Image (tube, rainbow, N blue to C red; front, side, top):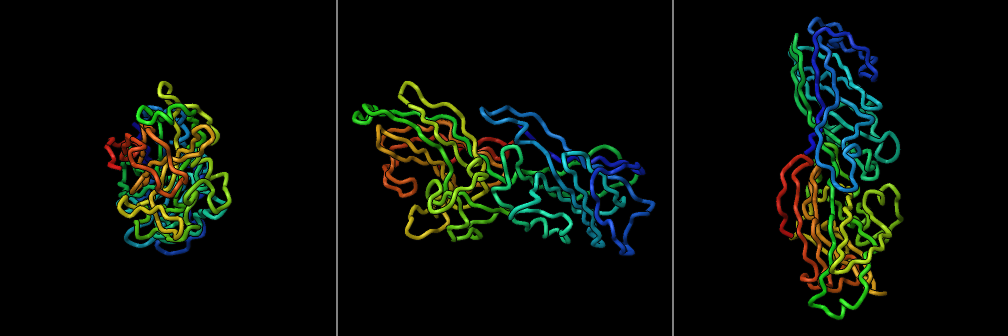
Length: 361
């Protein structure tokens, strides 16, 4: 299990030298409480719990805190302050005891590129919650996280409080691929080679504050990556490929020797429901994200896929036993195979530290 939190340590009257940049540096509003006798220093720090390690995935990579920022908005007078840390150090911030603050934490944000986040440009809470993040700004060791809570510092208080931050990506695992051609003797005589495993129909963006609902997903194909196949109709992007693809596996699988290497991918939430899924390539519409297995039967290239409907942030979706029983599709998106060709055991973990439940595919 893993629970990642931002811990708030409150110490009245403590003099702290910040390693961060606190806003406002040039604030002149008369409500500025900088010299208020009721000021307390709130120290924001990072804490986490250990969890069981999945094959091929490092705990340290998924909980790593690099650059991060904390914002505190006074709910009564509109005054606000932010502070940042470049490498996970504690962040001290002076706030007024007894006042109610809406606090936000943004972790591992990018400072360059399309998804760059600039704390100095934030004026309101909606500037944070509505900020659009881009999937390519994540990496295995640098996952974007967001959290919010309300705190009321009290004079003389000590100890900790917490704002829980969540990864804004979904995690997709596939742990075992087997073949069983006992009902397809013609295929049993062929060599089955698993060439690639990758994610298709990945939505490129999300918001820091919450996931896009299904009605908020763009119908433009350019809003998706690996739309209908690997780099299908688009240029590849290395940052996205690192999150979404396991390439050149070239693993020969027999009934006696399944493929048992765990592959982990990270994608943004996609709220498309199974009932609203679409496989047509003639007209692009929002559709389910898929795990695609590209394979060969001798020299015949075939495709199999597992749908991942109604994806949410900070959830883990695991195909832990995929059994192939027949020939796959000729296309990675167009549905032209018998559903009985593929058996899948699939479950959802409701958060990195949540409970497993079965998913009806």
